[in-house]
Length: 426
Image (tube, rainbow, N blue to C red; front, side, top):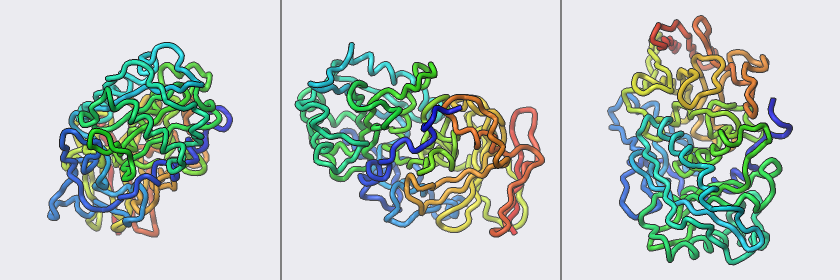
């Protein structure tokens, strides 16, 4: 079971920190073309389909005011999410909270695990390279207390000052033009325990970021105290807060809500990043450019159509069926199994969830449909939202939305592990 209080929002500041700094959200397509020497790439993924593409009806979009929309393609201003990306990584401490031990020991809490996680999740399409040109602690000019950091409030003067001081301290030793985004690993003895208050936050697409070496430091992830719940799993899973935060710099929203992980559970690291390993949803992999157009099926036709799905964790093969409901939303269908990053899957099967591009980050843009509501789930892994762990549909089961005239039936599975699903649109 989860420690008390864990299944709650990781950060009550999700909208105040990540999204308030995402000021230039738009529905224009961004191809992700990268120019060396910028921390503000033009787009998060290489999704740029012709208007004649059969996938065009599934490229839902939100209104321009939506914060970190789930729409495809991802809005401009975030970091690239394919190819080789260089993450400037600095370890920061303060006069009143000097870093314990070597700064590179702090770095080792997150790497190479973060690189491995992204390599696995992206099928090798994201070559994540952290760089530490300053191998020691980067000392700030003020005490941690003086900055007044409270759950990542980005427009507070103290937080703005901290970001400016980090850039000023690093600039003489760092050429910011050589990096795609910034990781700040704060000494873990600064601020409260993550069990009490999670300060970790990302500034994504920040149009008011400080400038260094002529480029804007618009995408930055901050990690504060260790997310160690005492279960003994920290050494193996504590790094996962950084892939979550980096998900924001690639343009992904928070999927947890005010009630915690109840909308998506442990099916995406943007929902829950504590505890055992888990992957990203297939929808997010498409947004990030990790799935080809040929791996996505757009179920627009009336009547009944069968589709093959191969396990999301495996490279190659069809991965995602999307059933658009309107230009803002639709149902995503994918096959999840216990392999790759999905070590906690306890009921392999077809995951069905609704994606709404018109819902802000942290407000429930994705909702998993539970095939077994109120069952209590099947996982016993710590720090996993158990109720949705058995949400998948298995052969012989069917999802229905009678109001919209949509049915998704799991027809069967073959010896290779592929599943066949049948989509009916009335």
